[in-house]
Image (cartoon, rainbow, N blue to C red; front, side):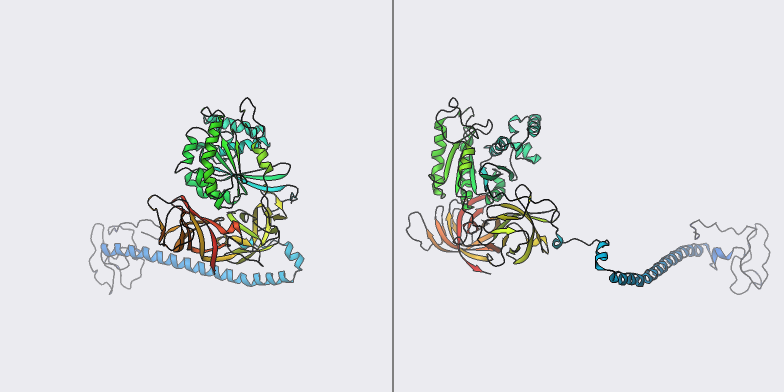
Length: 579
């Protein structure tokens, strides 16, 4: 091949026009057409080429065709080597040219420093990579905090398919939080899916997966106001697989509304072993909910038809468990029959022709008259982190348990003791506010966070002057409420999941200190415990956690133990080994 990539011509010794390009001191002997040259020619000089009539460009002293072909290959490699050498030379020259520009840049920087600071600020600065520390406060108008209405958070819990989302959707329609256009849209969408009765649930179930299956997966949230209160309602999932999401919703609530389906067979499926009615009741208590509204739904169903006997049957079946789990049926529990689908007894009292035995308040009347839990606005700041989301900055979701938080407040992220500053505060309607008090659910953006990994679900935001406890080993008082069929006893080394405020952490019961059965008056030594036993034990978590003793904070000192998707015990933190 030639340097330009063209094939070289074949060797032709009979060509007349070939003229050697070399100079020789000896004369070239003449050769007639069709005659082979004499080899070597008479009188040839030493080293004389064997074929004097072939130009030197083609064979360069090689003695045969094979050597000549090998030479062609070597020539191509040599050409490639020269090309790569040329490229390197060009790159080297380019670097030298760029190096000459550096002094000019330095001089420009010196000139820039000499300019006034105000003019330098006006000039466009080079864009730098943004980190968690560069979070900016979102722009928007501030709204005044409503001090005339008290905030109240309510979580709707219960077994799957009992009508929690339908009741929440009905409340939103009654309080006119949903306009007519949106209502018609939901009705049409439900009709297209052959689920006409589900359109109210679409108000809370915004996920397409939830609408197709008719099952709530994520915790839905909505807000409305009345004359005296500002409500935030949470629609928690009822399926067994989504209990962790239900715990998230209950951790944000002050009051629980336990929904029970009166329909034949549906109440029994939620009440029997494996149902979620009793487990949700237990979880609500362990997460700090002191008052329950027992909402008996689907009273208009054909198998019930507002039957008083069915209503009393459900009431008598669940009351013993309310007492067992620590609720006072006389003071902390309120019962109400409703129909979420028709709206009966939600906001308007029942027609005596429909139900002549119930003359109590409606569901909305009960919610309006509920006493708001005591708030400690002047106590140490405690905000359990429920979740985080990466947006313009790092959005942190949580509830102010105690204390007050303002924009610009310096707080500490526990358990890492990382100081940060509050850059913005948003309320449940996603409006910018200047401060938030105890009982408010908020969305925060902080400054000074080196990485998003330092804050996660289960962390606590505390005031710098009064930090919460950080520990990994603690003494607990535990009540065993259920055990697994294949694990009927609990002993040293038992492993499970600890749920404490918004935290979920692996833990191990490292030692049993004492056991008290229902028949015992005092604690005694034992190697294992069974269902319904009360134990004092030492629990060790996999990593350090931020919490409080139960005597210091009820919300941050009570916990739940779960194993294989089932709640097995509830307990309180008594003592801890600080880190």
